[in-house]
Image (cartoon, rainbow, N blue to C red; front, side, top):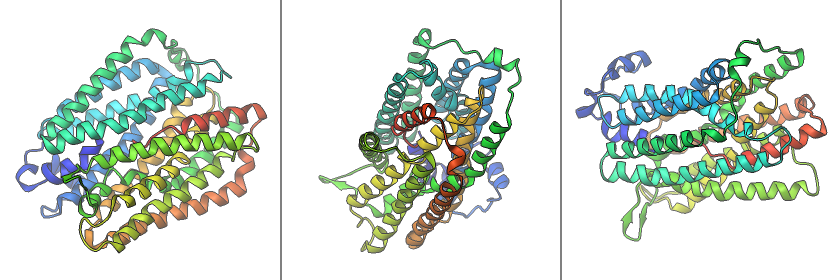
Length: 435
């Protein structure tokens, strides 16, 4: 669904002949301070996308806390899946667009952190199969990331927008049925019992939480390039990439499937690389890998700036530049978000894993708000400076992370046993993909 959202708003929903049909949209514009009737559909679409994508990472904080303390992960996941299915159904109608986004946000809040948290519960502490379980789970996520833009994007762009969203709803329904059918294999969640016993935090726990909170603004900047791929990158790609292949124009959403394929290959190679590295020397710490990730992430939008500057006109950027962008971006992503999730989950005090994972996602809330604001400033004539801004902000984050690693690396020291568990978690999480 996300692969269609900005394109749907820009090319259809926010056009003058359709915008008045959307219930509550004018009120939302006024609330955002963007009530100008003459602003471009792309600018408004970017603002709405940024707000939606940001809230999609904020609501899991509430969902994770509710699951940890009261309802349990299983019931939260089921409720979230049902609400997301309803949201996709509402997306098929222009009038209920904002209602659809509300249901999707509520569903994501209940689903996102709790679903991932259930994977670890399948294995006892110290079980080496935990890494394999996460790899299988993330492999499924990768396959979905490849197929969804192909199916939903093709239907949405070539047939009708509503059919693309309907296909997403059908996929969500099938996933919910499979999940419910397999409930007997999932351990019983003890959240209700935990909710009656206040979580006790030690001074060490509080110190770790404070450090992780202070890292959030820096991590926010590292994700600007990756999160922009669902927003202004698609608009830029429509105007600049040469999408003709064997005499046929490729749907722009296929770029996201292309990126997912590149992501699968790159992250598989990353896993192999670090396993080979670990046979001879210790793996870098999480902070070191975050620094590596931010450095590569900064190079990705820099490649787009160079491609735009060298292009002779519209549709003159070859797909080789798309390959370069996605390779650099996914090397960066493999060493940023998955590593951050591994760090936050490892340092979570007992009984707060769901909440801490959701806290980690908070930097993506801020990143998407910033992405929406930056995307609203995009204009084809200033595309070079647009991507240079992204590269510069991410590079600044890389520099900060480097110094944080030098100064605070000792604060994250682990026992040998915990170090092994951390390395395993990081390797398994490299299979993750940006949403």
